[in-house]
Length: 372
Image 1: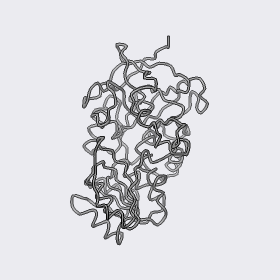
Image 2: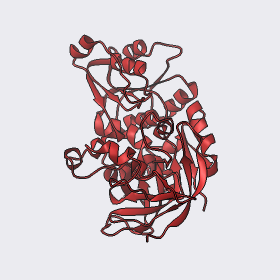
Image 3: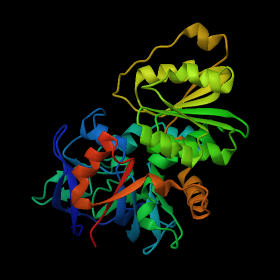
Image 4: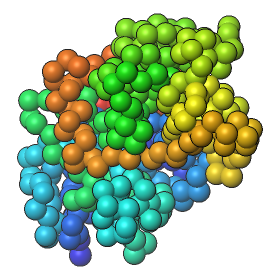
């Protein structure tokens, strides 16, 4: 019988319910798996929308998918990491479909099952509650809202031990998504005119990445002035409060006809329309904001077709995490990617306050510190 390790975890038991800190247990790693002692974990928009069942992830379960920690144990066959390594946990992918094999694991053909299935592919889970009942886990291949997480060799990324481990978890999803959308997916070049709709953690990461890429016009759009003010310190050349001005008209004015690239990070269909309309000739709009499944949006077909505009879906920045996350760590350590300015730390048992602060806009990127 597999030995079970005692842990604490934040459990969601039903749609829209508060996270409950519970005693639980976790098993030992199977072949290819990596048991990680979680040091800290970011709170992401996707955790919140899954709690609210925008995506049909089975409950009760343990969410969390921006974990950072220390490898505790590895299963048979694992060669990429060993106990004691510092790691960031990221999304899971199958590793053998066409997109994975061609360097696009974020568009894995099995992405939904791998990340939202609620357990291993065989239906088993690694985690049980205090009464011995199975809890759905393996959320994004990790379920890191707990003191330990069961990940896989494919979705653990080794990072330098001199980097601040408790800060690094959000590189596994939100920060990677915004920065990767600019640097990996859309490949924004030097001299480009770029605008981001939504200045949360994803949008502001895109602003910093656009500055690294050498974009000469970087426009942040949001309804919260404090976030726009921060965007200007992180590299934005212009900020538009869309409660006070028409962002499409202002972007066309600032750019002299429209942006080369826009990024929609709010998940609101009406904002996506603005991001498409704000493009210039042959401009590209990237979509990273996640609404409820089944959400539809509209646009003027001729005003996309005739100017040759492109609309691009982007997941996780289209990044290869084992390559891209260490690059982001290097950029941070060099002072060129100061994503720490987006962060506020909370104790693990303050998870519901952290979520509420994220939903209200008080905190851009909450990070929970695990005890011990």
